[in-house]
Length: 200
Image (tube, rainbow, N blue to C red):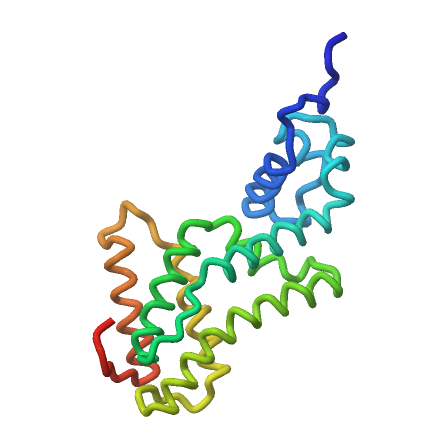
């Protein structure tokens, strides 16, 4: 007896997540129905509910996975030179987000569509990441290598600036990603009055 659409053994959660990521990034969460996601995967809409209870849970899962991956990948850098740590953070953030443009777009642009409870969870994970950068800035200030009046505002501004690279950078442009990273490090180091005390 032939299988019905949606019953294929190779239809898995990751395929549904990949389709949802692409559609949410291109068309927006509000405009994408579960039926549209099912069509993209090539299954009946009912098959999606074997993997997620609803669209809100699917959106939350994508954001949650993205934040966990970010927190797992970021260097837990405790070296003695805060300026070197800051430079490594800048390079990491640009590369990580460059490799995941759709996930980044969703993580920032679709926060408003999370339920209050789900928003609180994602916001908590975002704060964990922000705290890593703010700790570097505080260490820099304590050692006299960084100058900034408000570490929280500076943290948010730096992250927003670095994340923006993923929205406009193109490999075919006149500068490589390594060139862009170097330019952005100049901007960040200048903005916080960073004074290098040791080589990276």
